[in-house]
Length: 557
Image (cartoon, rainbow, N blue to C red):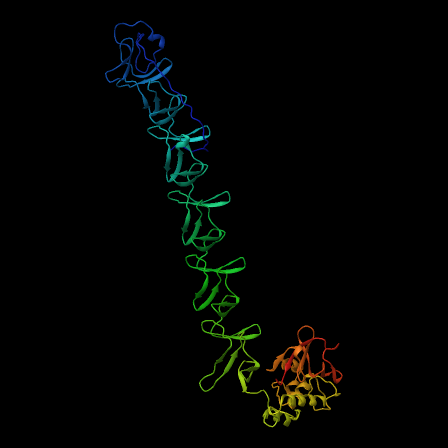
């Protein structure tokens, strides 16, 4: 290989040939080996001895001087140079090496100059006729001539592990840039050597096998990292759908695998082999749900007919209680939310019953179901089970206890043994006993004392045989329970529409923003009896003071 190659450009190759016609002529004065013979000497008279150009029995050409001496070495004849073998005198044809340098002689024997095509190969010589050997720059392109043969090389050639492509379609000109060779793509640098490993071209990345220098396509593993190259060889980034599976490649082309990956604010999981996960995913003892899009589920999700909850981390709730928002929910070991179902979390002989609503939220407070009234503490544990929410004054130890400690409870005027109308009238008549009494928040005293709206309703219910526990005069006196009307609304009392209101119903009012602030007893004829500053009075159901009806309850259905 010659020194350094220059940048290649395709140029046309000029060809020339020398034709020679041989004639018999007289040999001039004697000439000796390596001595040029002038054409004028050949025209001199000759004797009958053999002289000039002579063809032997093997059709080789020889040259004899005027003294019939066989000529050898360089011979200039007819303006052209010839080489006659020093040992045999045979005229040279083709490529001959003389004193370590190559020369090319046409079929006429004349020395050629420049480009010459002979016997299927190209040759190139300088102005002295010396053949080019190794790399040669011509018309801004580079060519290679083989050592020993001096023939121009065409095709792929390897120099110390570096590949070069000498294009047969361009008369051996060295390739630069992209080339499709035998169905494979290569890329050659400006120096002509084939690229290997990574190449950036036009903003895209390509990879060439370091051994073969062939451009890679499809899956590519480098160390522990995987890449995907399109059919055109371009390295892929971002989301790619390959053979029915989604994959993700980062900005450097590395495939996501065996871990979570946050993409566009959404979390995805990719298997060890790179495919995007969907559906159920178990990592250790933890479970996750990935949508069809691969996005990690958070919050509530209905899957296969069951409800599940997933934390912001994607972790599925399971096997016990979990507070979500302001409510408690219970989840089975496999993650499904319990709903519309009783569960016993106690031990044998120590039942601890809870009820999960249809929404899955843990039941608290009063709950009426199938003729039973249940009460659940704030922790969800059921503490009361009765066929009626009514407690007679003489039979309710709780009411008796309140009386003994100085809390007022209206005397019982009717109970479950009375008709609905009788119980309604008992409640309303008791309320009228407070007519004109002073309004005072958090009070539920005897008639003639202080009372507020919920205190008035509470005493009316006591008289009609209905115990609104846990609402009570004792609890109502605490600052945190001044709005017992809100708690009374949550008692297990039938709710009816406002248009269906009847005498004896409880009318609830809100502040215009959905928060209950007041309760009154409906008298009929669009009138209510209520406790509101400054006193207990009868008013229109809807008035300027209370224009927003929240709802209606019917204690005695």
